[in-house]
Amino acid sequence: MEQHEDHDILGGELTAELVTLLDSPDKIDKTKKFMDMLVGYRELMMMYTCAVKEVRTKFEVLDTEFSVRYQRNPISSITTRLKHTNSIISKLERYGYGFSLENIEKYINDAGGIRVICSYIDDIYEIADALLAQDDIMLLTRKDYIVQPKPNGYRSLHLIISLPVFFANFRKEMKVEVQIRTIAMDFWASLEHQLKYKQNIAHQQEIVSQLKSCADVIASTDERMLDIRRQIEVAAGVPTEEEILFDKLSKMDLLMS
Image (cartoon, rainbow, N blue to C red; front, side, top):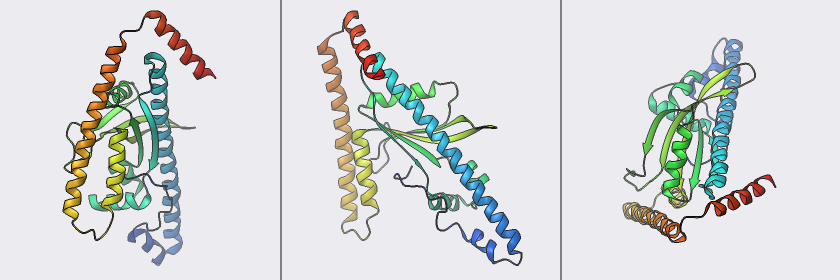
């Protein structure tokens, strides 16, 4: 999933084949086809927007449940995005396909995306497992870049899921990309994304090596923070039933206020 960006429905450049529609002899017919595709594209992006909202709500519900049941929030923040039109076109071209609604639905798995930021590594897997356990969620692909980081040091859990979205007159299965990572992983990924697009950088290989080293340090810090949290939990001891009940009642008051 690319860095978060606002979605431009027109996208600027649509592809040479769409531009030539307006230069052909039968301009009226071609223009109608172009406008039909544009309307269809708007509707498709609307459906991806709704799918992302559905997934976001699921994560927000899980975070609320964990807060009440386990007295802590596993999710620090949630961000969503639609893939920019130019990015969709570029990806289709890399795959060897033209721009069409059918090709977007079939070959673009990350047109709609959601990024979930957690405090600790174990939260990533607990939240992911809880989402995938829901009977309307189908897992299409799973890539664990935490267990097996990318060569540059990138770490995150990537899921491509499918879920039904209900509209006024129909139901449609939609694909959404889910990225789940810690705050530290997200900090590194954001900076790395900014730096890799800088042009004409001297000693680029050295910088790549330094970024990889930083990624390793951040991963080690994540593991140490998780270990420290667990030590604190053990040192605090097991709460009594009365303490658990009182804490849950306090949480309920906060939720209802």
